[in-house]
Image (cartoon, rainbow, N blue to C red; front, side, top):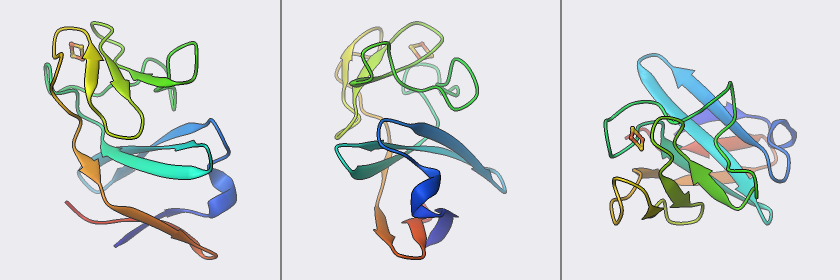
Length: 106
Ligand code: FES
């Protein structure tokens, strides 16, 4: 497992990118739970964020790719609108303990 950050470094409703060696991923906390994905849109295999650490749409309830506006469910990574409709972001298993937020190495 890879240590991403301390638990309080990812607040409720916040998203953050992490670049670890050649691995680009991001995490978002929603309803207390942390979700982690590779930072790679299934449409064109590019990074998703539209500004540093900004992965969420205006509602804060969906993930959005900056390039062509694809929207994804936070808890499953499924694309529900956009050019890659029905595709999924690659989810990373993650867990959280008092030391931090951890993700599996894909
Ligand atoms: S690259 Fe993400 S929607 Fe096109």
